[in-house]
Image 1: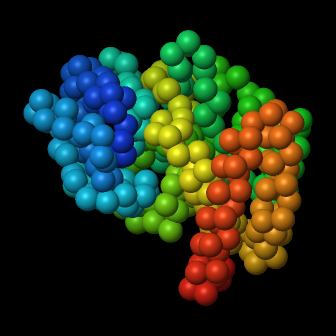
Image 2: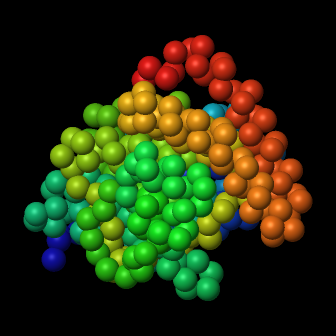
Image 3: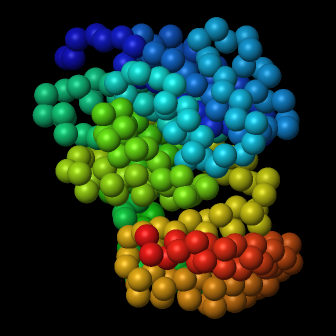
Length: 315
């Protein structure tokens, strides 16, 4: 048994129009009464729904008003810089901790033999008790190409989402999603946090890749649970969500796959994926999804020349 410790964790939550979910998330942290908790930082990315106003009733919650939507990674970095605790927990506003979540995860991190664990995540359950498939492999060129035409739905191991695994056991993984992402501040600071070129999506996976490249382990803990609704505020902006997802995929590819591999991902994303998405949406009779797909790709095509001319493909 690990001896009791205190003030070990800073929690960072990024809010953008999260409504009641944000209040429930912060309430779960406060009500846990966990002695490991140092401070909770909520970075508000220019919300217009008043969701941040309800936090004023919490005494140990520090609200940081960004005044605009900085993006997820940049806002996380801003929040993380405000604290000094040994661990940082990045928690989505559509997530919530259970009473033992924080204590249990710290006990795991501080067990003898776990000093090389840099990141860990826990088993996430939704309202119905369903276990989320929250771990991933590092993407590959082949995996991204398979996803372009939907082949990963038929052969799950081609994709980076670990849908074929029930997430009912502890194991070392490549990545745990950022809904509940605990990282040692030591390694977070060493790697300069999240890469702010990712506005949203894949910034957490990119960080996990850099963590593992430094020799640290990433662990998934099925015996510790937290709540995660999933979708979050991105459900409100489906076309823009697809745009940011595709944009991050391109940035990730040029960062990690080399020029030729990344360019193959870029071309398939621009030439094949809009057609496959349109066909699937049309077969389902969802004209709104067809419209959202083409709005998203219009945004992507508008962004791409600016990104190329800045020399970003050379990263």
